Length: 70
Image (cartoon, rainbow, N blue to C red; front, side, top):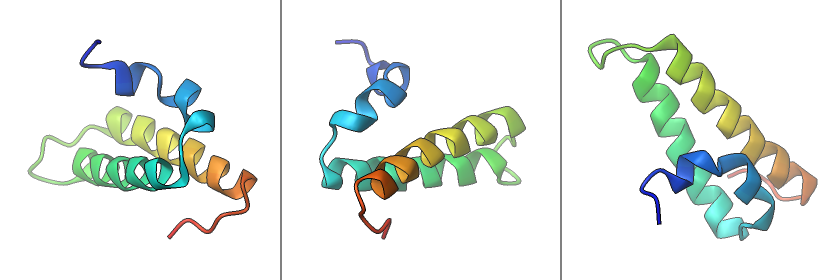
């Protein structure tokens, strides 16, 4: 299995994940977006934008299922 599978299939996998997995991915995406935008961490606006899009995909799936994000 590719080490990058998580990233490559992020959008395809979202619909098939459990609620727990969605919450884990959400927390992961939040942290990565914050790290990409942080000073002293090699700020990368493109990476931050990409992680916010992934976060939005997870949030949209949670809303579609009628589940609160937290």
